[in-house]
Image 1 (cartoon, helix red, strand yellow):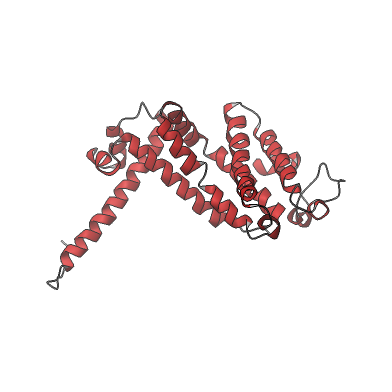
Image 2: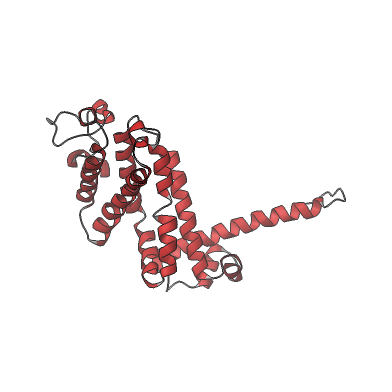
Amino acid sequence: MESIATDGNGAVEGHLARHRVRNRTAKEAALICSATALFAARGYEATSTAEIAARAGCAEGLIHRYFGGKKGLLLALIQRRASQEVEELSRRLQLASALEEEFLQLTGWEVDNMWHDQEFLRLVMSRALFEPAYGKVLRKVVFSCHVPVFMERLKHFAGYRSLPKQEMEALAQSIKLLGLVFGFLRPVVLGEDRVVAKTMAATIANMIVRGITDVKSSWQPESHAGRTPVSKARRSGSCLWCPGCLENRLR
């Protein structure tokens, strides 16, 4: 057994307190991971707290102690997922060199993110339909958490900073809206081809960004099959969004 030295001034108690904090954090994470897997595989209603605890290797009572029950565990799951996505966005996407390029890559990331999160979105949206409290959390944590991050990234560009404050937020919100519609609702719920849906999102994004940027500096000549945005596409010899190039990237 590990021996713990004490100086007589509470060193032992401090060590044990830190150990309990770490232990609780690990158990909370295990329960959330377990719930995520079981909710996705079996659904929220069909999953019991006993099954969640057993999969996590924890006592069932911890779900009630840490989260207040299965509903609280779902809310914690939603909040954790949103925080992870914000971290992933900041880590994976390098800031683009132009406003139009940044807007397009953020839109593409959001569309892809909604597509890959489809099981999670099925779960939380179905709960929101029956319990309004979940709808409020969904709006605040899932559908609004990325917007401040989008705004901070877009503020690096003078064209964005010149917009009125309300329009700055609206532009960032439009990225989220395009992601939801063309990354989840149309390809997942309505069964539309994913490439077609993502290409339509790109078309709309192009239309939006053209309204706030210099058209001549934002587009290649129209000799390409459709207008192809941004200098990165010009340098690489392929476009970001046309159906042929897009389909190759999605394979």
